[in-house]
Length: 435
Image (tube, rainbow, N blue to C red):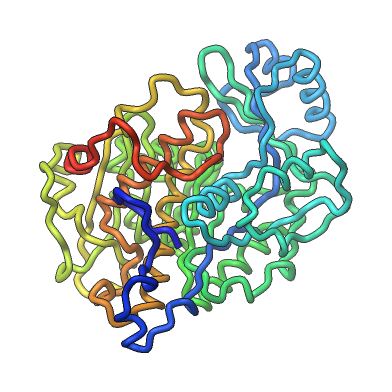
């Protein structure tokens, strides 16, 4: 597995090939394996630049996320093709995006569980889905269905506002029995999204999601939930607060979703409130930056060497060099927070913000997997005096997630098209990381 975080040179982890101490201690790290599991609504993202009149014609509320029928989806797609408004079509879905990015960052396996059209023709959405997904993401457990996968239209108006129209197809037809227990053996995380529980009555996807959560719990695999959009959360905030407190270990959201969930507009306060529900929270806040909030045991807290930051919680980053833990695993739990401003102040030109949050989450998953991998390889290491969730400190995870998110913002695709550069020309890394 590729090691996350700050490195000047190409480096693979653990470096047992160059360290004879592993062999001397009788440790065979080649047996250590880990991966990430995701439950997903398989769909294709279609990005288009459109006039506002198009939204009105198809009954789409600006800035919203609307589920449309096959007839509306067909008419919309035909108009986009006719007027040549489509910028790109890529395999999509927040969980699938995250797993694809993870596989590139870690150069490691991920397992996607969902549905796929049994009969696939060139040029169809199902074909594009398969051709745009990393070969390191296993699709062997997809359930075949007789019909199309979903399509998600991201319609960007001239003012930059994004409006989503989702045609479900058969993406919600994943049956509980199609979620195999074997995929959770050795997994470092289960990734789900709020969209999975927003289905029509009778669709089996919610039951399949709950089965995946039960299997993850049985194998002590952390459950990671990404919230999707603020509209999904605002529909049933009480339900989501209850769901998160019962089932979720790690929560990923943006500042708007955080406000819908907690009622707090300030992303730092939203993270603080969300910690009442779960153990680790990542919040992307657009041009403001990225926050990470979690718990650590008071005995193993580590004080930052960076300047203390003002905010709604004064000097909130005091213990950002700590590593997060599940709250239940802490003897004396202490809330810890970390923050980073956008990398290089953010891109000078952003084509689309679609996928930036998924990219940040993939970096966090990589660090969680590195931790499990190292614990399985070197269980007696001082890195594992507690049952930590990540290998790196919260401060370092913020920097890694921030850098990966930047890489998506500077391109058109919501997924990474390559790994991060080993070392960037013109960048003084020591000064950057010391900020």
